[in-house]
Length: 76
Image (cartoon, rainbow, N blue to C red; front, side, top):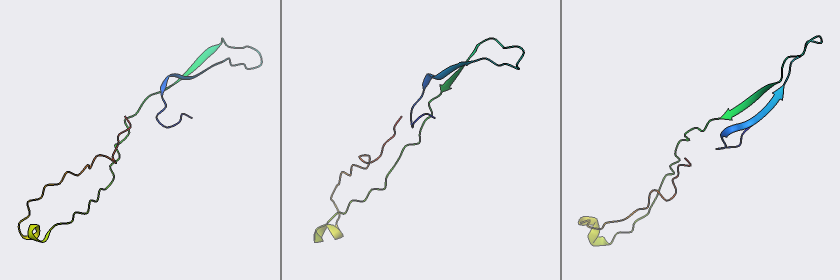
């Protein structure tokens, strides 16, 4: 079983032959290919408390930069 985000060609290969006790088949190779998948991005809720001065409560003019992507990621 591949681990998370592991993929590739070939992932695993083995050879085998079949026999019914009287005859044996030719040797065959079985190759497993694990194809990559696009994992969903992970977004985490953000909370930023902001203290406002008394005069800004009636006339808000403050601008804030909030780094909302700092705790979000997409492994692909």
